[in-house]
Image 1 (cartoon, helix red, strand yellow):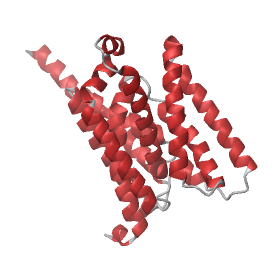
Image 2 (cartoon, one colour):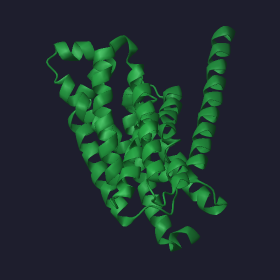
Image 3 (tube, rainbow, N blue to C red):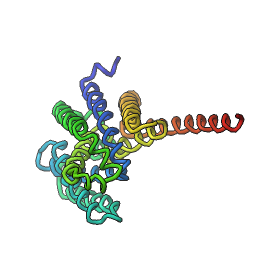
Image 4 (tube, rainbow, N blue to C red):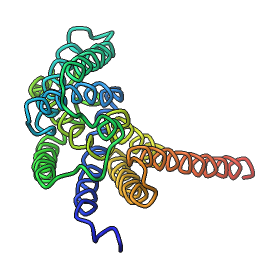
Length: 275
């Protein structure tokens, strides 16, 4: 195929395939914890990290990873202290991220490609980025594999997990840092404004059809991979921002699955009534 003749497209597809695996996987735990908007919050903080690293000639991925990881830890601490108003922690960090990034971009004279970071760009993924993405993905997969039962327990009943002597605080901190890392990986492809869609929408789609938790994870990864890979390929041929296409494909998947599920449920109800 034509796209494989370009090195930047090969890098973009490799990055997309890894992101399509990790983000929905982490997204399942995020959505069930009612933290769906954390992607927006951390991505805005990551933008300030990108701006700072660009000013000091650093790697934008490293800069965004450091900034979003610190923000993720702060969100976790704010959630614990606010409790009934835990969602405020996300709003606070999002506002902070917008403010800091705005200041950094205003005072610097660096040529900052804002559009590519806002909506993603398949041409900006470098070999160094691929290395960072692969290392991050390995760490995320190892963590989930080692603490899968604990994560599930904490996700559904955090208070009972604490009473069961599970190190909830430590696991939550590591989990939030890895969420930040997953979001950082996504920025190059999807962009700051649309990053939360890849975390939440495939999960929402999978929950419509899955019959178990593990099945939900499998379907969310399947839908995530489909949307991000098709979005990257279509963006190449249509010459548009990949993030926008990925979101549209994700929404179309959700609509089709929802209509199919509604139709199946309707048939089941009619069958019961007729019998």
